[in-house]
Amino acid sequence: MYLPPHDPHVDDPMRFKPLFRVHLMERKSATVECMYGHRGPHNGHIQIVKKDEFSTKCNQTEHHRMSGGRQEEFRTWLREEWGRTLEDIFHEHMQELILMKFIYTSQYDNCLTYRRIYLPPSHPDDLIKPGLFKGTYGSHGLEIVMLSFHGKHARATKITGDPNIPAGQQTVEIDLMHRIQLPDVENLCNFNELSRIVLEVHEQVRQEQQQQEDRTEDGEGAGPPTAKVREPRHEEAAALQEQPVPFVLPVGVSSRNENYPRTCRMCFYGTGLIAGHGFTSPERTPGVFILFDEDRFGFIWLELKSFSLYSRVQATFRNADAPSPQAFEEMLKNIQSLTS
Image (cartoon, rainbow, N blue to C red; front, side, top):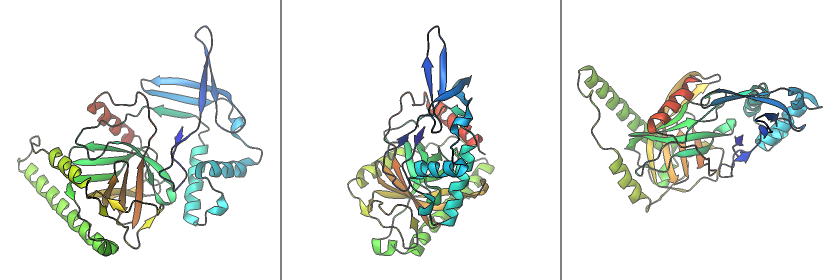
C-alpha cells in the first residue's frame, strides 16, 4: 500500500507498507501471508475475481489485535498514519474525523477488493504532465488525486477519499478556456477582491452554458465541436513559463501548509466538490486553480475560504499506462460509479 506522507508535508515522498505476500512453491502451488498488524506474517488468501480485479482475505485476524485493546491499536495507527499522538491534535473536529477514519479502515481487517487503475494519457499540449498528486484537505489530512486533461477541461479525481468526498469523485474541475488574471499582490491579499473576480467569471460561465443549452434545444450546435482548444493553451504555457508572477494567499484563507510557492505561472477558473458527511448534499462551488510549476498546483475553495496544495507523486509505477484514451475514460466512470 502506498500512503501519502504525514500531513501537511505534501512534498515528502510516498510511504510504502506491505499488506500481503505470496510464496511460490513447487508443483505450481503457493502460500499467501497477510502482513497486516504487528505480530508478523500469518495465513491469508487471495482470489482472482475477474480481469483487473482481485480480493484479499486474512484467515487469522486475531494477529491484527494488540494486547492493549482498541485504544492501543488506535494510538499505534495514529502514530503510523499521521505521525503524531492524540495529544498533539487540539482541534476537536479533526479528532472526530481521524477517529472516523480509524473505525472505517480497521473494520475490514485487510479483507479488501482491488481494482486496476490506469495513469492518464498525456498529450504534448497539456498544461503540465498529468498523473498522481498528493493534496492537502484540511482536517482530513493528505489525499491522493489523479490529474487528467479532457479537451477544454482538466479534472482532479480522488484516488483516496474521506468521510465527505469518497474516492472516485471529481474533487476539482478546471475550465481551461477561462483564465483568471490575478490582481497585484497588495490587492490579492484582499479576499473580497479575489472573490469578486472569480464570481464574475462564474457568472460568465453560467451564461455561456445557458446559451449553449438554448442552442442545443433549438437544434443548433449539436454537432461535434470544431474549435481547436489546445494551441492557444500551449502558446500561453510557453510564454508564461518565462514570466512567473508573485503569489500570496488572501488574508483569511486557511492553509494546512504555509510553505507554498510564492510565484505562479497562471490561474484558471474552476469548481470544487464539497459535501456533508456521508457524501450528503454534494455541490460544485467556484474556486481558483493555480499552476505553480510542472510538479505543483493549488486550488482556492472560495466558499470554504480554504487552500489545497498539490505536489506530484514521484514514485514510478510499471504497466500502469492506459491501453487507450477510451480505456482511461471507462476506468474513471467505473471508479466514480462505485461511490455515487
